[in-house]
Image 1 (tube, one colour):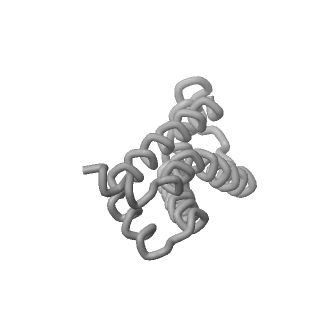
Image 2: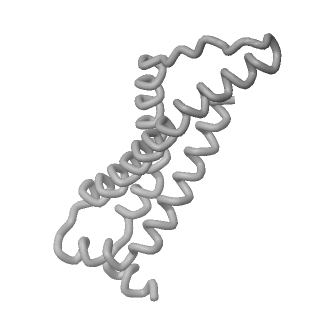
Length: 127
């Protein structure tokens, strides 16, 4: 289930970053006109995607902790009339931070590559 959610999140981030590149076509053209390299443009897009991934990890973690405790209590009371012991795994949380970073970097790669291939001429013809 977690893998499926990670894949869906990665696809969502790819779509978001693609739309972001499309919306910022003029900005990218200006950066190209003043001499920004392909690598610099790729880095901007990938770093932005990774930051979005980290922010989603942080928000998800903040919500997951109390909700997981509440669900553990409710499930325990429903089935065995006692609350379940809930253990928070810092290692698991940090592992997911690494996974989110990897997925966000990969999800941002194609939009970043596309952004780096835009020329000033294409940008001027865009609108």
